[in-house]
Length: 456
Image (cartoon, rainbow, N blue to C red; front, side, top):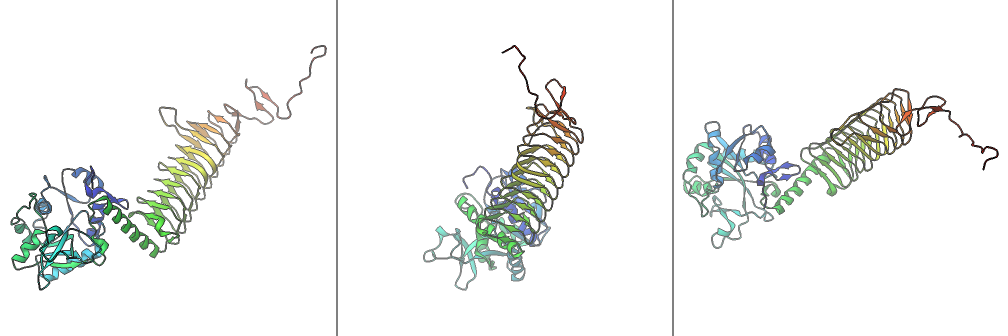
């Protein structure tokens, strides 16, 4: 992988490879999982999380040594063991279930998962004797003369009789690089007269073991196709599936339409009858039913039902938008809550704010929430009207039904039902407007200045 990180933490459709493998095992009925980690085990634990036990392989001495490292966690707890390579993200639960069923009925001490399609190119080739019995698993470069065309491969999934496995591991001898290989047990079982059984994958893509960035991209593509097909069969419309990207943990409701170049990432949840895209990115978002999000980004934020966003807007930082709100083009919302029916149609930044119901936020409005050291809150109460190009300097409260004039720089709280104008903004009283010295002058046409007689 040419990486500083363990191979199994590289992601496929938003989840570490190892998470796909453990999820498949759980869905196949495995209740107790042990993850064997090496020197960078902390990174694996952090990416995979709780719900598993971890065994440590102090030195990377091969796959058989890795299984031996887990012995104390499972010995005496199970009759049969399922062992999976951590770089097998595409294996399906139903494949593992069928493999375990075949193992239980075979009477063999071990069962291996194989693939016979020539489109899959992995080094471990399955060698069978003249009767078709599994004889060994050999690296492609080491195949005997005349057998170089063998296409059947070992996928990296095994079932074992636990009573046979543990003593058999002690009989293995290191290879040329001093490693103990799990595949050596196949030859051992054959020599003992109890050959391994085999089960074949139904879909060759399941056999893709990821050991390079090229294979990582292949696994990503195969998983995305699988995810798209699943949601289309669940009632989601994708205008152009090939340009639609959905992560494994995401969820989408029926009758939702995903337009081209749409990304539904992380654990995003999209409700029913939504229209998402084109050109939209949802990351860990919660989107209620009947929402419309056009050419915009929603990150770690929530939209209640019947909200429209975009084009070219950005919601982030755990923002919460109540039902019926409308955010138009070039609106940024950060860590704020907007009330039901509130509108911000153009070019605004709302940060660290709480906005009530049915507020109108004019074009160019900015909540000036950062003083260079700390972030401060802005509160705008229900049915307020914020005029175009208003600068709301936090901390600040704008009362219910209050109004700010166009271009106002509001530095002090505005009482309910009050209009403020100017720089800095001051209340506009009925019949007059503030002057620089605070005196009131009447609205209307400006006075006409006349030159004094005898002068000029």
